[in-house]
Length: 625
Ligand code: ADP
Ligand code: MG
Image 1: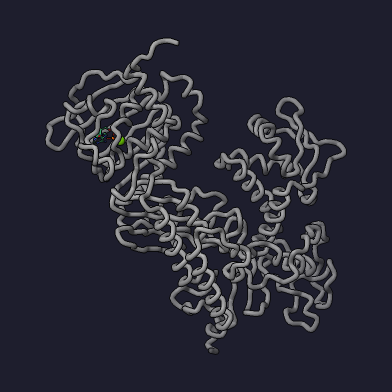
Image 2: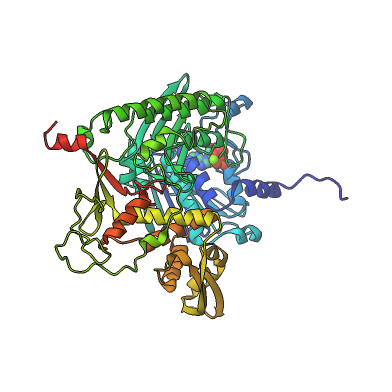
């Protein structure tokens, strides 16, 4: 064994860099955090080549005095901690004093800065961690840090970098987390000289959320707030109509810092228990504020995770705040403008009252016993509130063939209303005729209007069918029973080089969906089999659709998400379209299957699939009540 030696500083820095600087996104995160700590009101981020080529962050914060520049890029040098106890009341984003040193070690870093007191600026170049001389330069008050050629001197790490697009995706997420945390700061992000985000300072959080995730999502959010002792919880959560297939839309901030916390994520899931389908995750933007001494932020190199003094209390605060809010919020989709809405929720009074009572009991029980896994899940009244029309005899296997589009299109309207044969008229379906064999009226070849016990339901035929197909496919894929229909003669399909590569790379995944493909040489692949349940789609067309999804939608690195995206794509493609005229049998089959899906009210994209007009609402509109 060789003798024990002290490591040279540059090696120490490289080791630290390994923890702090994983990819270009880490650089953006650290530089933006420094700018926020410096009290900047405007922060401009520009990157090139996914961030690996160049990252530049310019701020108008307090700046660094020229003589302190060498310290700023030295490791374990910071102005954010003075004594040991400060570590337990950190109020800034940074405090370890190793970010700039670590980044400089594995890149060519240049820092330019000027304080308000000084006449001119100063510049320091630090290629590969070796600081040069501080030289004067002209620049405005604030700091600009430019990082070129990340990992140029650590080829192994460089090899781990993914495509520019993927790296930019991570980088965008890092940008989002910080820009969401401090809405009062003006941020911009440019990639290869293209503007990606321009976010003016705003005093409300909602405005910033809308800039990132769209006005539609932001406007539907439910505000939540609670104060328990020194802990304030505030923010917004989405209605159950908006959910995701993963938890990436759960943004949690602690004293202005984005964090991940398993326990709090779990509490969030619990709060929505029964309101979302299994496998769906709520969307939330939550800010926790508490005195810094109540939390230890020094447990994770990038400070993504923290340790709370009393995480049990936080868990129940979050859970009970959301539960309380949901109890007083009407979560169903209604068609009336909010200001006219009946506070009872517009349903049949007695039924609504009963559901509410059950919901309260259930919620109380859950909050009281949050530590133990309750069995309330599938039986919860909240769930039944969302499925008022679910029929009792539902667990019958779904016959997809009932909705095959191979039916002959309906012929001329003959005026014969008893004509319920497949070729009969579809438009003139009597709603309340003696036989009641037609369950709904099709209007504009896209909506179905049905009478229900509580009033009238209007269904989007495409959205509902898409939902049905999606759930059916998903359950088959999950249980591994997608049947493949083998082709007698495999069909060669010419693809682009990228498509062919993608097809072969994801061969196994496609196989799980029932799509069998074989390499054929060049950019041609053979389709040897296709999902039997999708007999009405052309296998070649389906393959193209899936490849397009894999190529463009590649935002889901996780296999499950990818599968989910493909399922959505297939369901959308295979579903009846708006504009398809349906035969009475098809309408009947569609409505019959409606009771078998987990969430008949929404298509897989979360758009409403059905609107409910209660009789009370209609009476009110017609001034009868
Ligand atoms: P930390 O943020 O943990 O203190 P860094 O290595 O990120 O460590 O930065 C070192 C020091 O350099 C900071 O403590 C701060 O004094 C100074 N500094 C870095 N970036 C900026 C900036 N944008 N504006 C003003 N000062 C900065
Ligand atoms: Mg820092």
